[in-house]
Length: 343
Image 1: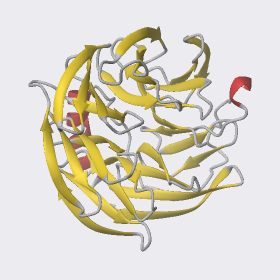
Image 2: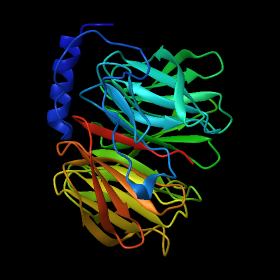
Image 3: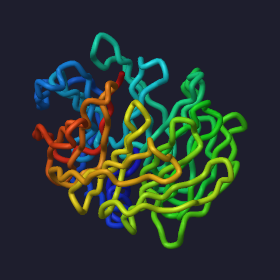
Image 4: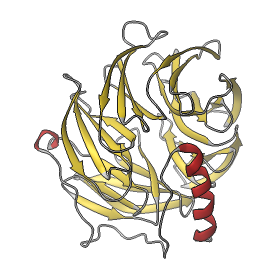
């Protein structure tokens, strides 16, 4: 493990820019599985049918609501799922690693890691399961991991501070929101090269990202000016923006592809955005007040509930997607960051 004090200083600087909380504490990293001393977060009765995972930046834990808590490192950030649903991916920003854990019989087991770039945050795996693309936020690169050999094969140069990533429906293109570069990077997943850079309005800080079900339109949250940026993937150009909340972060799309949910950290809200009527022109449906500084977000596979990680509030909010109301607030650990709900 490389010097944690240096990484903590770099992360504090980045956090000041992005609105994330500064990581605290230091010590030796661990790659153990469930720790008895770690708290198991409650799972409300409405969510008993789902497996729900949450990363905690400050503790390095992955919480599985109502089941177990897995202590993996000094700090973990993003979550991802393999196309077959059998592997959960976790980005370890303290050790610059991608962690993979087998998801079987409702629990995580069999941990393995691979070193990637500087402060990995989010990831996406191609539909054939062969490649994983990992955004390295503290650099200007996306790491490529060969999932068949579990090796880091190369880095692809992109604009500064790549953060969120989403694939086109066919897996041919990876779209990366570049927070420090005011751009969306387009990666050819077959050639493993940067295919294009789509300039966003200046100034802007593209942060979260989502795509329409047909792959025609991209949506990026502008963490700087509180808007949702819309991009045409065919022409690879910026189209328009829609005002949402203050310091918008991550985006989740409903299973039916008609709705986007965007966390707005500084306004303590989740924006509900309609893309079903016209995917090229999203419209605001509601802003829902939630606890803490909302960041990570996920929708249950049936579209019934939305789970939101409130960082500073040390809590998770559960939204009823039919009524757009908060129906439960769950105590979390120290700094809940990302949420994953496998199908």
